[in-house]
Image (cartoon, rainbow, N blue to C red):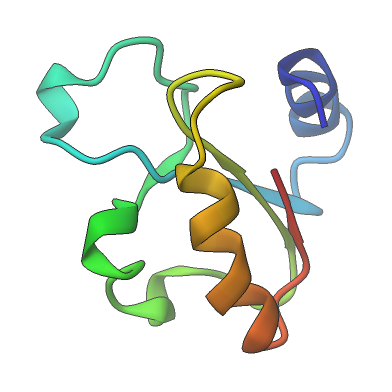
Length: 86
């Protein structure tokens, strides 16, 4: 899902997806944040999963197209039954 697709989906049907920023680092240092996205750093093994809604598609993002943090974070979420896109 491209960033444009994410923004379109957020605007057209915000109850269907949850955008999750999996970049590592303090929120103040992370640039280009998507407004309304949850910050759940991949380095914390996605922290408490209770923050993540189980009834929405989780759209994970990280630094850029070469970053693999979203893919790494997607695997354990998929194993736990979450609907995930990156």
